Amino acid sequence: MKKQYLVLAFTLLLPMISVCHAKDLSSCKSGPDLVITKMAARKSADGTKVMVTYTLKNKGNAKAGVSRSKLEVSDKKGAIYDSAPSLMPGSSVSRTVEYFVPEKGNFDIKATADYNNLLPEKNEMNNENSVRFSVGKSF
Image 1 (cartoon, rainbow, N blue to C red):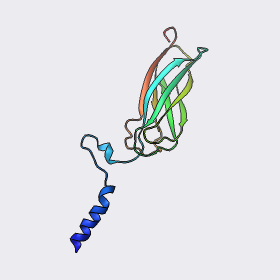
Image 2: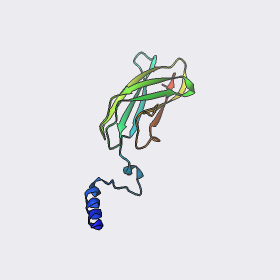
Image 3: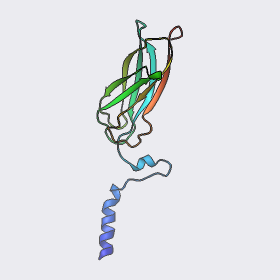
Image 4: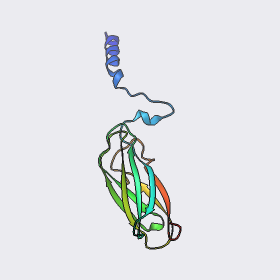
């Protein structure tokens, strides 16, 4: 009688067990996974600011709630915090922020999705991307 209950329980639970792939263990865990997929920087029309556009994507298999991204300029020139809307699995949103650079030179700007780790994600190690830009003659 115990074997019959065990077989019945296994048969009922089998569809709820997630399948893990040896090459991609992230498939074993459900949840959102926010990544910065694209970044670009360009000079504003009046030449006084840098316009940074980034794309935030949910690569996970669950909805990501509202999050905050952090954009940091190299050499500790400052940071910009940007709110992003909730994203369904596979969806993305492009955001543009302005940054005033008070001096000429070459800079890197790094964007971090969910910078304060408030959303539990499948992978917390893939939240950053960066782009280089110049302020001055070559920009």
